[in-house]
Image (tube, rainbow, N blue to C red; front, side, top):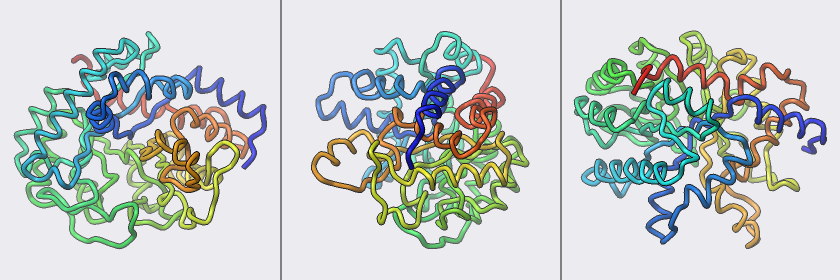
Length: 356
C-alpha cells in the first residue's frame, strides 16, 4: 500500500499533538536479555530513538515468563524483570514509571515516556491470590491470568504461531485472583484467554477489562483473536482492544505477502482489523497494542536476506505509517486520534489509583 505524502504529514501531526499509546511490549524481558548480552543502556540506545520517532507517550510493558523458567524460577524471573526495568527507567530521565493518575498527568505534561507494568500471565504466583499485593506494591497495575499455556488459574488459548481450539475456563483459584485484582485496583487483560475464560471474566469482573493485544477473528480467523460478540461485550463494559501487529494474527496468508519499500507488510490488513473493530465496538474502544516480537532485529534479518519476520511493522518508529494508512482509507481524524492513544489514556485515568 503506497501512502500519499499528505497523509504521512497528517499522521505525523496527529502523533505529535495527541497521546500515543502501545499497550503491549515485552520491554522488561528484552531489557534483561540485552543487559545480559553486555549492552550498557538499551532503554536509551535501542528504544528511546524509535519511541521518539513514533512520538510515543505511553508503553505498557509486560512481564512475560519463558517456559523454562517455570514453575520454580518464575517468581525470581518476574522480579528480575521488574527490577531491571525500574533501574533502566531511573537511569534515563526521559522515562517515568506510571503507578497512578498523578504520574500519568505528569508524564503527558512534561512530555516524558511513561511505562506501565503488567503481568502477561500470573504463573509466578501459583494459585496464591495473596501474592498479588506484593506485585501491586512493586508497581504492577494489571495482569492477564495466563499466557498461551495452562496454569493453576486458567486455560490459556493456543499460541499465535498455532491455531486450534482449547476449552476450559478459570479454576476456582482463578476466580479468586480476578476478585483480588479488582479489589487492589489492577486491570484484567483477556488477550491470552480462550473463549471459555473470556466468558468467565465477563461473568465475574466488575471493573472494565480489556484486551491489550488482540485482533478481529472475523478479519483473520485465529483463536487468539476476538469474535464480534466478544468485542461487543468488551465495549459494553467499558473496555478497549489493542490492535496486535503479529503477522499471524493479522493475516491468514501473511507468509504469501512481502514487505513494501518501508519494510512494512500486511498494512491494508492491519487497517481492515481496525476498521472492523471500530464498526463493531465504536472508535472509543479501539487502540494500539502491537506486541512487537522481533521488530528491533528485523532490519538486520532483512539485510541477511530474510524476507519474512513476525511483525507487520519494523518498530514503533513505523507506526505513523499505519496511522496515515487509516486516514488515507477514509477514517476521520477524530476517530484516529482516539485510536492512536486518547482511548487508552482515558481508560487508565479510570483504572489507575489517583496517587501512588
